[in-house]
Image 1 (cartoon, rainbow, N blue to C red):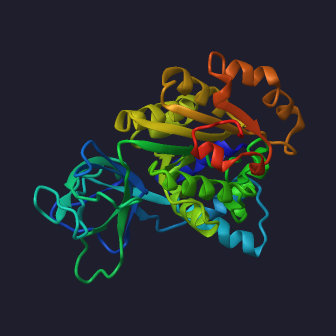
Image 2 (tube, helix red, strand yellow; image 1 turned 60 degrees about the vertical axis):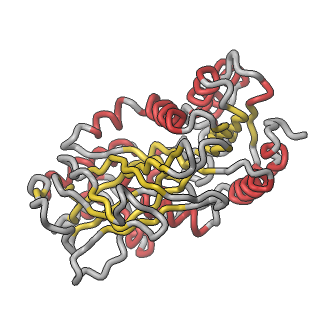
Length: 382
């Protein structure tokens, strides 16, 4: 069975184990048994004082019964004890149902206000428990590079959890580093669906060697010249994997940044989009990012296993003045048959047709790329 089939099962099984999404009264706070997941996001500005904060996540409650045994049986898995523990932890992230029509109030830090207040009530959650909204704050962060807005959900006084979200306050000008995750910074082995499943649900997440060092050197070089670096981790993975992916980037010391992940739910139809719009998803999200930050330059990292070259090439054709560099990791040693086609020179020439050849490159090892050159606006090593 394929990786996509497993995601289908994870999307469908909750409906077999639980009643429809829970409906809450608007005056009730989040209950202790409910989980609020807010992905690290960004805030945009035109004057460095007024900021539009983007909020995306889900309010869910766990299923009473886990589908873990059905998953193991359905996919003929035979995990050892350590892998089974990890599988159970990750399957739990999908074994949830949304809490609908629930407004959530958040407490802002002392330096920020919304309409003169320290609290903001977000729009009610969707039928699938989704939160996808914005709010505006005033915050003077001039002279404070890498400023972040850490806000907390207002809970019942008896609920001692520390729950909230983070937004990176990204200046209107500077460099945004857009990075794919699977096989770009994390070894996923996308070309082998069995290995992809194992690397996603059974095994510890493993970094692509030297990519963390490259990103940190690049960030340092951009800061030295006041280029306001911001990182955006753009992946086709479902939102449910946010916590493990965040932990992965923290463990291996990747620069913190926005996570852009995909919806995966049955009730709001997003699962259909997950299956049918995989090739347009990244392009749409990059265009959305550029609408918020039209004056920022892009440095983009991806890999050869899926459609990153074609997507990034299209971005470069549509927004030639924004794109500084595209780097595509050549993935080898997983599936020789697929790799022969994926790594063919004519594939890259077609993907980057009418794109200045000085603005794109491929690489096998991160040490081939000069972070200093990238920070100076040069895609090819000086």
